[in-house]
Image 1 (cartoon, rainbow, N blue to C red):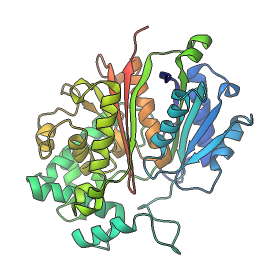
Image 2 (image 1 turned 90 degrees about the vertical axis):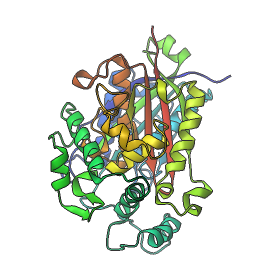
Image 3 (image 1 turned 180 degrees about the vertical axis):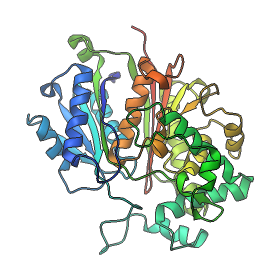
Length: 396
């Protein structure tokens, strides 16, 4: 028999531009302390911790944890590219669900540099070597940074296959800015219009503008997950249940299909979503609010289809119908998403958990989605990992 797993506490610090944040261990500490305070627990109550970060040496997680306490508990460091934060949450949830522990901490942080992402290792083959070969063949343009080549290349493939307009991606970015305006923890809170996004400098002519790409960001976030028995014993809240969760990696189609949409994780997203829906006993039609991985506006559009919100090729209609925002079918990225809230790689998945937990609690202030009962989180890392988590509001 497996345990039910509840989100007892969440914490998040304001995301900031590179060069303006605290050091990574301080950000991790602040996020942990915020989650503990939210849960009403002491660090001595935590039985395992999972630390998510991409850019850092081994055991950086311990350095952050030790600022809060040194209790001898297992601390495991997690690196799964941009899905790192939700991978840490996945492991913490597994530990509680299995009965190994009753209280586990997942936290993530990132202290990033300005500019495009790049590898810190130039003396060995990159993890994305196979993907790069496919991208070279399908896209070319080696002068463009790798992440832009991949995600913008996937957006271009959607444009070519389905006639999707560049303006549609601009509408997604403008929507993100409107949502972030109500999020005090977002790095960018200025509202931009579709026209502003279209007028921003082109990163790839006719394919992507600068405002369609998320910014490098520094930040931290954390979540504490507990078993029902532990929550009852300690008088903790049990109003947010992790009802389903799946982590999927690459499939043969990821590279063999020679399709840029597949290269950037579409099939991982679809598989993880299908498995999470099945675990939770829900479908796309049951979801009220979504935090998804909009590292580029192009990927948000692709993810609508990967999550089954619409059929392949129909995402532009979903955008034009307003079914991705307040008053529509789903509210996607009420936090402002990666595009406006920011994307500190190790913290992103846990910041999504933070947002959705507050949405289901009804404590999201001006961002609140009315009567939100079921929430979906999607976090994607190239290379790859796709994590989909379904949360349900539980009545007392």
